Length: 411
Ligand SMILES: Nc1nc2c(ncn2[C@@H]2O[C@H](COP(=O)(O)OP(=O)(O)O)[C@@H](O)[C@H]2O)c(=O)[nH]1
Ligand SMILES: [Mg+2]
Image: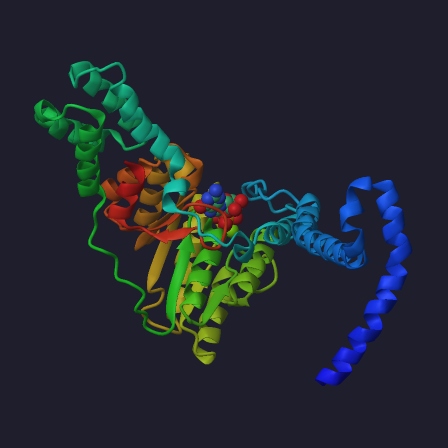
């Protein structure tokens, strides 16, 4: 549009607008006498104000629409927390567990929640008990005397630190008692003593010989399948090709649950019919890994403890079966234990270690307990490295165990 046609346009539109708005302006002045001084300008003020108000309403309603829509989805979304699957039951209906997982995913996928849960918030219950407990000891200006030390000892034992480890810590602390005046100093001393107890030579990091075969063992409900899902996520995010093997053929829902995790993490899954031989699935899984050039194979296993002897025999059979394809496989046997079971976790780990030998422990549900002291119990008595800790149910809630980071989060 050139300048002359623009001038022509305005010379046409202005009188038309003036003519149309004239009567409106008259009416406005009779209704609002205060507008009288602006009468001459009303022919353009009315359309301009109408236009800007409409624009304003459109923008505001568009801005409000987005959060409203997601609120609506929230309202129909199922609750995030699901009941833990019950201990082994062959009659367990297959569908609900599968549905439960799919629903859980729609409720809060990692992409939706966005922020990774911090270790500190995952361990908040233990932190409140331990760090808060030490603060409480000094309330009312108490000094570090025999009574206070005794209460501290009780605090450590009720946090599942373990009797022997607590005794060791208390011995050293009583020697240092003269130098400790307040809760901050006591926390610092306690922290360095705990750190001494839980520090390991760092477990060898993920430099795998391809395919690296991992077997995941532990009793029912401790979080094996979930931990496998989290591990698969971790490995695929590192760019590794992962195959997970549904070796818990005993529980109908187990393979379904693992299939959901495979989809979620982008791993392949090898599964057979329910009640088929776990050793045969494991064998096929390793064969598939070799032929598909996978980096990691993670084998899920059953965990029914009431037939303990059979379970250990079954696990040994799986080991033999995978070693037929790769002599040194499984390269790693990871034992999963549930931190909320306290000292039982330690007993279980010892039991599995004696029967089949374990290379590392994954301690789950540390977010659900105030007794995270079990980490200290496990690392200081088992002689097997604590490799991973689970601090929630989502894919990213698995951490490589780092003694310093852990101690920092607690005290
Ligand atoms: N809060 C919490 N729940 C967990 C964690 N790990 C697993 N779970 C839950 O524990 C329950 C049992 O887990 P599952 O993987 O099925 O145990 P499995 O029987 O050993 O395979 C499920 O509801 C999981 O969501 C964790 O680190 N924190
Ligand atoms: Mg399972």
